[in-house]
Length: 286
Image (cartoon, rainbow, N blue to C red):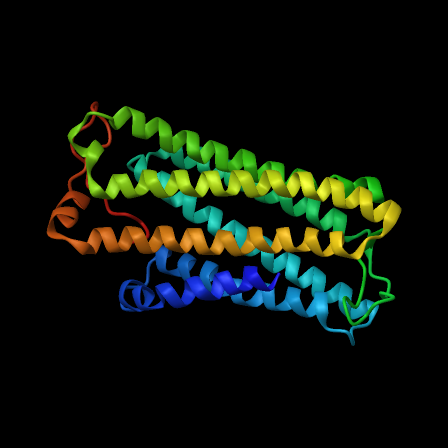
């Protein structure tokens, strides 16, 4: 678990100078707000999570409060990161009202369903004291094992969300292939970062589904400490990588838009469809 947090801090240090130049000195926009949310909430919920996992003086009530708080913060962080991807696709499609409607419905459906499943699961959890408090203060158990076993559905919802985002991105990319704007630096960054984001979270979400199912079965019958920690570590990894990759997307786009006259000129004169005249393109996160 420490290596996951170290990766996040290391990435933050690597990109902090870019953050000052491209984010803090820029005007306040929706992109700036979602960047700061996804960037700095990722310092809060892992910290709460680590206290829950490793502080030996916690009692059962405090374990429950800390875990519930960390999960709620985690959900907010992931939703904000996914919002960045939705905004990115909306810009790529020339701010199409039809695409906006699809993204709004998709985001609301995925978020509301995930929140419902998570809250329903949390309502049945309890935290007995561990017999090895120096290693972990409490265990997380459920009064309704079959219900808690279905929480892997949340990870499947994320896979579906990211798949739709990737399909919309690829669809637009194929449509633009061969056009003058198809090989521009800014669009190449859109497609490159989108593909990397999708592949990373497809693998992580599917791994979470598989490991969560295996760990839940193991906990029920064997109560093995190491596999319980492994499950929690994969959830934390998903959260941290959402922050790292989504903030990288914003920084890369801002750097491309401000990095050269050629890209700046392109960013205001991009063709989104052969059926329409040239339309201005201003990345919503720039």
